[in-house]
Amino acid sequence: MTYSEIWHRIATSYDDGEARAIARILIEELFGLSYADIVCGATEQLSADDTLRLDTAVRRIEQGEPLQHVLGYADFCGNRFCVNGSVLIPRPETEWLVDEGAKLMSTTATSDETQHKAPHSPKRILDIGTGSGCIAISLKLRLGDAYVEAWDISEEALRTAQDNADALKAEVVFRKRDALKAEVVFRKRDALKAEKEGCSEEECLQGGALVSSAPTEQAMDSINSNEGALVSSAPTEQAMDSINSNEASTTAAPWDLIVSNPPYICNSERSAMDDNVLLHEPHTALFVPDDDPLRFYRAIARYALLTLNIGGSLLFECNTRYAEATGAMLRDMGFEEVTVSDDCFNLPRFVRGRKNSHNQ
Image (cartoon, rainbow, N blue to C red; front, side):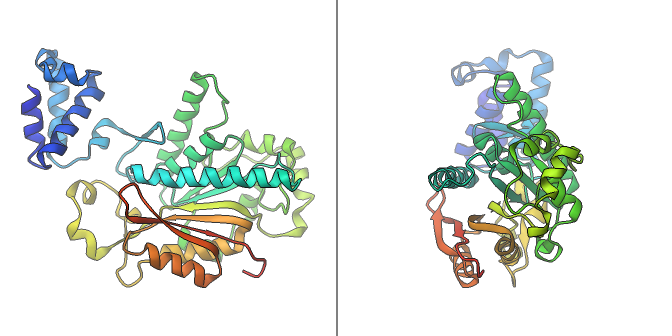
């Protein structure tokens, strides 16, 4: 099978330029061939087994399956994440959330040191609607000692996210880096009920969330040793003593950063979407009713007002149609320093707000 034959088959579902790119990436990833090898006819020299493997992959793409599902992974922030039908495929523009979140946490850390505020205390980060876990895990890899928690309503998505955290932790160990950097606490939670439900006593204790000031470093070491589980094991008695000593002061520990890329595509926009998205990515992670496109943003923002630390930030990825409206909503709710930022395609997609007042 020649390269020309391959991309022409794919071109039945994509334009010629995109078909060529997909064919090249597919061959490079499946067989480790360079573009020079491909154009010089290397695919015609494949074994019978490899030719069958290539033909099967091309057929799946012809039938509308995304390239990332055929390969089994997608690249995001320099790492590879397993993807399947239970999670959205990570998009390159979403990397902004990781870059901005890491920058905010690093800036806050510097400010805390300047103000002599326990610089050793780990930052607390929450990713709502984690899907593949790409945002939460990337933030953990970037920041290292932060406590990162990630929620999703889908058990299948949480299993995929946990697999990604485990796999990337193995990669970290292989590279002889900190073996704990890819660990994230994953929980099954409904974003629309977060404000009403708060967090259970068990979850709060496991995450150190009944503490008004961060747990001691010794306590956090004990907690972090269990973070990789879908539901963490209980901390040691010594760690619990450190947490319980501060329980009376508050019912939910603040987050320093809440980040979310929630469902934001209106049902009326379905007709403009490609089949490879409509037929192969989870609709619960994609769509919202036309009459309430900001429903997830409103619910998450309300929860953020209750649980963000003073000076803590909320980061959203948005439908470009509603980014300005999302920013306006945050201002109306009392968030300060609200900004709307463009994505890599110069479209308004990201909204940031900061909680600066005790009265919010």
